[in-house]
Amino acid sequence: MKLDVKNEAIRIGTLVPGDKGAPYIKQILPHGFESFSITFWQTLGDTDIKKLAHEVMEAIDDSGAFISSVGVFGNPLETQQTDLQTLDGWKILIDNAHLFGADIVAGFTGRVRGKPIDQSIERFKQVFGNLAKRAADKGIRLAFENCDMGGTWESGDWNIAHNPTAWEMMFNAVPEPNLGLEWEPCHQMVSLIDPIPQLRKWVSKIFHLHGKCCTIHWDVVQEFGIHGPKQFAFHRTPGFGDCNWTDIISELRWGGFAGSIDIEGWHDPVYRGDLEMTGQVHSLNYLKRCRGGSFVPNPK
Image (cartoon, rainbow, N blue to C red; front, side, top):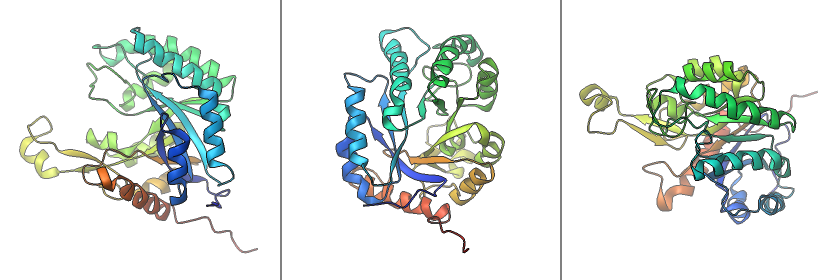
């Protein structure tokens, strides 16, 4: 399948686990995905990153699709063995992102475990000050996902980049233009933050989007609150949740964003299991409609 996407400022794609790589891409490429984000959990393991890049680029071939980003999601600020492997993963991906044709490396910031966010900022400055320079020298941008991973301002194990006050502190500590966000509205909605005003304010710092939405059961919030026994928020595939992605994409266009919205699947409580790819393909087509469909050139 050949995609005509050279004029699409905003591509719609999906996440691909690094261990599934090229065979997975080959299977789903015919559905019309325009971009792919290659992701690893905590470490790169025994992945030969150069071999993976070659296989992935061979898989997308001349389809018109591209690799939007590569990422490793762990805690690069701590010093346990797995944490150090996460940090090594950041370095390896920064050095090899160009082999995928990508200029974004993404992941969690990490945090000093069990401490408030402000006590992680000095360590963040040490680690990502160096990584930002390493990345800038290679034309690479670093993007932090805004997932709290069950953490709060006071404590957590994974990520400080889930709150706009933390973003201010991070980007003041390391004021480099190649540091930004891998944003999605879902994580903000779970915190009962309205994503649209936030998007409008922070769009210039958003390098990449995860396509994930949220359904909030307000009746549960009103009766039991957000710390009660019943779940009040559910991660959803775009098109099935409460977000108006037409508004989100309009705000992205107004803000001059150019890049990808890559669907983060495997979370939806309804479109899961045998319905996973049904939900993702619906989301793919829904998000394409929300951006206005496919690019149409103006008449001469």
